[in-house]
Amino acid sequence: QVQLVESGGGLVQAGGSLRLSCAASGKIFSGNAMGWYRQAPGKQRDLVAAITSGGSTDYADSVKGRFTISRDNAKNTVYLQMNSLKAEDTAVYYCNKRIYPFPWGQGTQVTVSS
Image 1: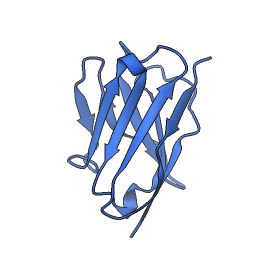
Image 2: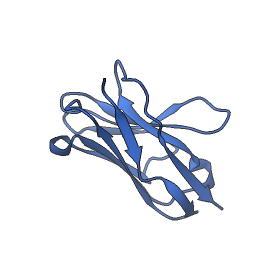
Image 3: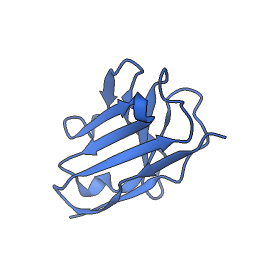
Image 4: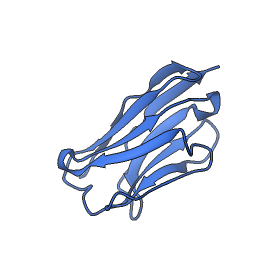
């Protein structure tokens, strides 16, 4: 059973930065498009950033210019660099494959204080 483990969240002031990491228990990232998602209380889980196996990226309009997704296939890890954080970025952040996702991990909580 593949396990996804997200880390790097925390409490940060508005305007601050965080770097999230997502590691998998098996060598599953190479060849797969990956995404970072977030879910705020009472809301659905939404895609915020995606990266193809070749490294092409795409972002939700709400985070464009502030977030950067990257991957290190050798380390089986996907990252999300988050800058200029806003209170509305507060959510639990998850990573997963874009297509045929694995069981979701526990995510990592990001809280931005205004």
